Image 1 (tube, rainbow, N blue to C red):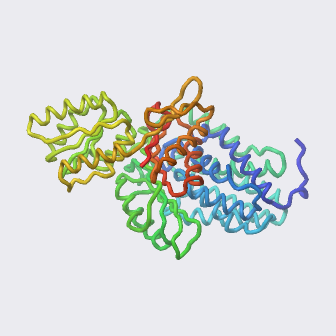
Image 2 (cartoon, rainbow, N blue to C red):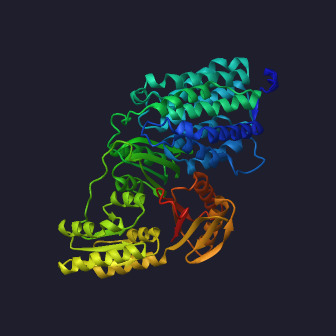
Length: 529
């Protein structure tokens, strides 16, 4: 391809910004798996590029057409704030906010571009409670510094300098972060950022920069060949869960929450639209063991919604919470959904597969619980639970089974559980909550993606994103304040992002709560309350 002369593009406007975003999304889509394979810090959960890609898609896909640069970036930063996923996604969203705050004109030159990278870097660094060398923040710093030095020579030279500075910083990350050196890889978040900046060079010149791509190819081979188990970085190995939520609060409350979450865990990142005295929206991210304490810390300081909890991959080195029985009343959820069981076990709620239902109920009795409520989501689980309850009653232990049709209904029942209530009243309240939770599902079929609500089918769609939006509309039209989304193991991140974006735009009063990925089928399950 013929390179566009340096004088050809000295200004970055909305059209170039959209082209840049599209090329960056394309690059991360093509290289997502390779970058994810390098992910070992702050935890080896193999999702860095996936989260950054989802954040960029939420920011720039489906936005208002025809906006000038300043308005485009402000909208993109706001969308990213609400949709950012994971440590890397949240940091990228805050970088977009930094760009939006700095680029307040319809077009920017090289000096303004460099100033924007500086603002983006500073904003992201300030959002992280304990910044660490050898990460995406280090790469952003190098890119911003290189851009500032090259700014007098024009926009193309400045973009190239930023890309080269980013690639050089990525190459240096193993010497800064022991976890990377042990694994023989570079930082995944920094590499993804370098790919994003290189997409701008391609946008401006038509030429493909290869610094980050060369690093990806070199270290991807090493990562595949490496067999040594990679421990988590010092200070992080005991935390088994990633908790995220949106917080409506003022800047002082968000700052106070940062200190509280730092006491509870690590990888604390809190981003917001602007530092304001009035109430605004913050995206909160932390790695913890005590899920409830992390969420309660937010509730104490503002309005919490869109809660998402993810258990790290079993390959990560951590100590999961010990089995904990509520001394007032045990609640046992019998389900095959292993990720949901792990989530519930962190909330003093017992959970077990069908084959262990009797043993776990006996454990609750032996631990001193006076009674127990057992929730089941399949006929097989209900039969096993009734047998276990019958045996427990024979030993003088009071227990009751509440059969439901889907695991999201079990979660709705757990949400209204009150151990201080009379036993029969508590059972009735939980059964009522489960019944009131309407369930919709997407299922993979040969013809396409099937949509079902309860036992009624509503057609076949070619794309899961279309099906997800249709299902959300059907549930919301019938009346809903909260949608609890349980993706299947085979569900694409784009499907969940499309659903969340659609609900936010079409049903702004409905909250969406994301749960960890479930089993292979259904492809997606939603509970509407």
